Length: 505
Image 1 (cartoon, rainbow, N blue to C red):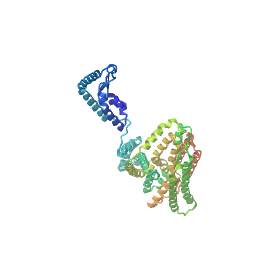
Image 2: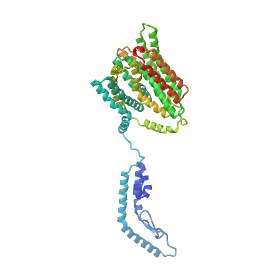
Image 3: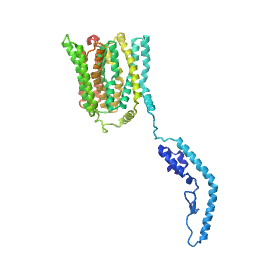
């Protein structure tokens, strides 16, 4: 009705364009039905005595007094009809042209304009392509340009340093793409399957690097890389998350139940390292390899029980219920809006599986080249395998988790940051390490869980420090700074530790 009464303004007015598709065409139909009466020239009520009806028929505005005779009334009506018959005849052509012109302009405007708030339904393929474009155009993906350097350097014998650096930097964005594909695929499936995917592929890069190192008989690099991944997540990733979140917020609160459960599982995993090591130092002629393989099987069963506990029986324990509206600062509004937008944008299952497959293949090839260059890198730079395995190699798999955890803490979602850091350490100790031992068993490689006393001491002390921090359910920037300081101390320790002091690790 508004578009019809507005005449020409309705053709270009913003209110007409703001209507949805069905309402817009209903307004168009109503306007077309009202066009004849709108195009009729109105009369001035002060001068004329006629009243127009919807068909253009003119009737007297008032009846003469009773003193008037019937002939006078009839003559008056006859004169009025004759007058307006002539007027309708002279304006008929103009009226039809005006109505036709307005109709054409109105329909053309309706076809040409699109409501600004009207959402066009896109196909899954188009939406998936747009999301894939966003994922591939992130700034970190520019490090993929280093991949040809590592591959060509490996084939052309440009030296282990060039190959290691090229593959090292290219694996960081590939690890992120692998994680993004896993998350999008988990969002498209049900909760149980999604949780299993995250639990399995959450440390896919570490698994692939582990298999590559076992094939190259670098068993010491395997042990040190897994221990270094645990230390990196517990001290560096968690510490920087607390530090960044504490700088923006004075105190950040979280539910300590999930964190304590993860730390308990982590202690069980470290216990599986300690027992073979203590047995090796206590008994001279013991079958350490058999003990390690059986321990790996039982630890793997324990991790399956942990998944059932997390995904089925006690899901509410791992839901963050502390960060309510009162705890959120106004500055976290943009973070929440961004997070909601990211959740809504889910990559389709075929596209996510394709991205997961391509990323896995690329990570496999680059891991082969990087691991193959470690021996030459150690000889050329005079580094120890302990430092390369504990400090450098874990950066590849933890760089993207590091950025994700820090961003969550910055948005006052410290519970999610703890889940990323401590949960990843739990996966490495109870899933990746048993996986490595069993893969070595299949490949007939003597990979056991016999660690050095120094490595076990560092692991146990790190877990105790994190345990003392998360028990109160609060974090601040000082606790984060202390965790980062502890990681620096570990790095200094491994920098000056030769391979002979770690029992070949």
